[in-house]
Amino acid sequence: MDEEVYSILDEARSALGHYCMTECNAYCCKKEAITLTKKEAELFKGSDQVVEKEDFQILIANPCPKLKDNKCTIYSKRPNACREFPIFKKDNEIFLANLCPGIMNKKIYLQTRKLVELGYKFKTDFILVKIDN
Ligand code: SF4
Ligand code: SF4
Image (cartoon, rainbow, N blue to C red; front, top):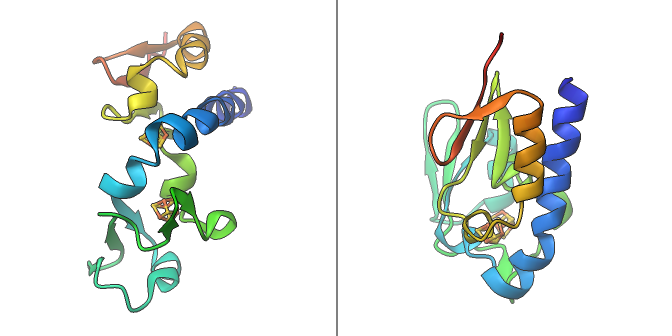
């Protein structure tokens, strides 16, 4: 089951790719606060946009210093939070980023339908929660 869910999540992110580049213009890379592991934070060494926390760090992407011409210049090494955005699984829940224009414009509607068919139900407009029967 998990494998199928992760495959649908990947499919959803791929389905958004073109929209992200051509219509949304990397909105999330300009407006998000991204949680980084210490290792990921090294990618942003020297940037005053990284805020230190106890065991993790936060990048204030306003915009992200790695964004150039609406493209990520560290794409293959980008932080996990960037890889997973705007839909991700945590424990038994699937979260959708409510301010993502791609989601608001139903670009991953098909994939969210598949998740509903697998037993995930909308708890609110933007969060899917797996209901165990
Ligand atoms: S906000 Fe959503 S649609 Fe826009 S670039 Fe980010 S993931 Fe893509
Ligand atoms: S690291 Fe890349 S994907 Fe992540 S916010 Fe910066 S530009 Fe965007």
